[in-house]
Length: 530
Image 1: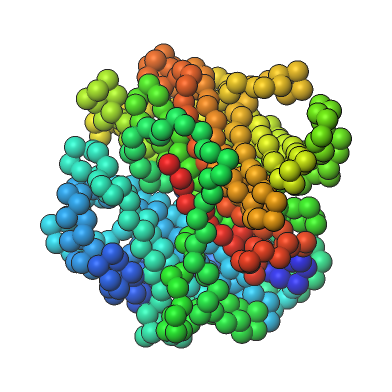
Image 2: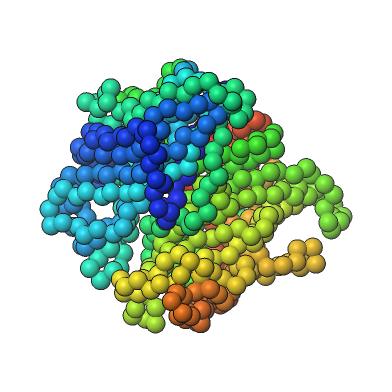
């Protein structure tokens, strides 16, 4: 599938220092006009991109960008909208789509960056500068390699003077190059000479992803979820509008016609979600939702993350079916995927501790073993079919950053739960060990469409978890384990996640809506249900 395409894998590692620029570098400093869509309407903005590349490379040689920064200057209209929310500071995360081309081959990379909170001025403009290292590019084909700036997005997480999140807690701006940017968006042209390719002709290999934790992503302070599990007849996530309307393909490059009649809003931004070693049984899906923290009387929004599923073959169920029913059992394996790591994106949530103290924490869920997705199909005499799905995921909760009333509390680099999050396990003999259990119930009435949760179609997954005690928290000899354990750990935390429809790139099922984008990512973006 990717044998004739340049694969451009760019993963942010913002906690690492920028790589040193080698002798013989090509320095990029481009200030480009963009148009950003604000809640009040489209507004002009300037995006300045700086980076350094090697002046030339050989086929199969690593091309590593260095000193990558992206600065966006937002107009006074954006400042006015932040001021109306009573925002005193704002934190930004940016995403720049970078087109990579060599001859007729095309690919797209995502350059992501983060910025520390900056003060919101009384009036515009507002400049936000995001930084982060990126991993390397490698092509096995000689010829000029060009990188072009494309769509730009920035997520804003404003906070009040007291350090609390505003309402709403985030703003997402989508930006496209302005018409007068035409012909100016090429960032670099790098000659690639004949060398010893590391792969087959036209292939590319990413360098290993950085091991540092990713930077914070804006989150939402939310009241706790209701603890009622989803009813079997409840429909899951809501798919986004068709992102392909108003698009055309020219020489392998997808072009969006902004003025196409009836074109809907662009597909929402989503993390990369592609199975690299794809098989006919490979499924990819996006998941998002909420999780309660019972001790803090609130819930945490878990942003959109990617799930890579390798569907198994049907087999005899572990327990014989009762008389009058037919059962079969399908075990599958899955992995989280975020920038090459088996984890969710980092998420930031604000809670009120002890009834009065605002506490903001940036966290991430990290996978510690294979995720098991088991589906039991039950056909009954009435002609109706039932689906009992259980997702068993060994996940630890890592705390990256904590602020108490706006003041940083240094928890160190190793603050995490002692063990995996745990749930009541209905079959501990077959599934030992600590893990989270989420249940998805589905029903296929005779002659009707499926309702509830179906692995390939998505839907709601619910469960209840215990948050274990914490370890490794604190810095400079200070031990904060007991503080976090007393504040957060404990049972009875309700979880509700919504999975979108899966993408099976090599063996698609023909539903009413497309499954996959042209580059093999899930087509539908679910919305978190409460």
